[in-house]
Amino acid sequence: MNIRTISLAIITIAAISPVVASAAPEQAALNACAKAFATSIAAPGATAPKYKLNYAQRHFDSTLSDYYAHNYTFNMKAQNPKTGTAFASATCSANIHGDVLELTSTATPTAATLASR
Image (tube, rainbow, N blue to C red; front, side, top):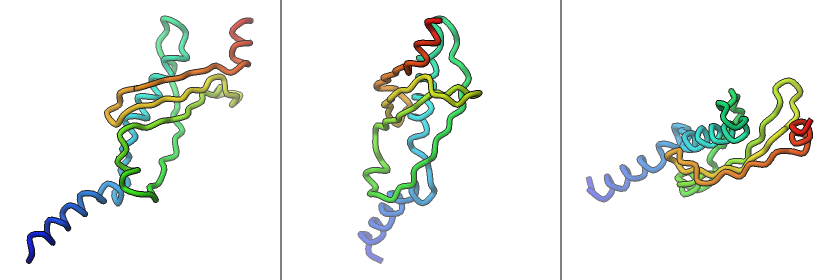
C-alpha cells in the first residue's frame, strides 16, 4: 500500500463525514441568535420570554467550503402564538461557537401601535 493513498483516503473521509452524518454545525449559532432575539424583545428588566424555534435544517448540496462556514446569518421573526401575526423581526449573525456577532432587531408597526395603547 502506498502511504499517500492511505493519507488521501483518511483526509477525504474526515472531510465528508459530517456531511454524510447530517451534522448541524450551525446549531450553536442558531441557539445563540434565538436566545439573543428573545431577550431583545422582552420588556426592560424582564426575563426572556419562552420561545419555540421553527427551523428547517438546510441540506448541503453545495461545496464543502459552504458546509464549513465560520459565521452564520439568520433572519428571524417573532409571532404571536394565538393569532400568528408577526410582531418583531431580526437579522442575527453568529459564529460556530455560539458567539453573537451582530443582532439587528426591528418591531413591526402593529407592535409599536399596541405598545403605545
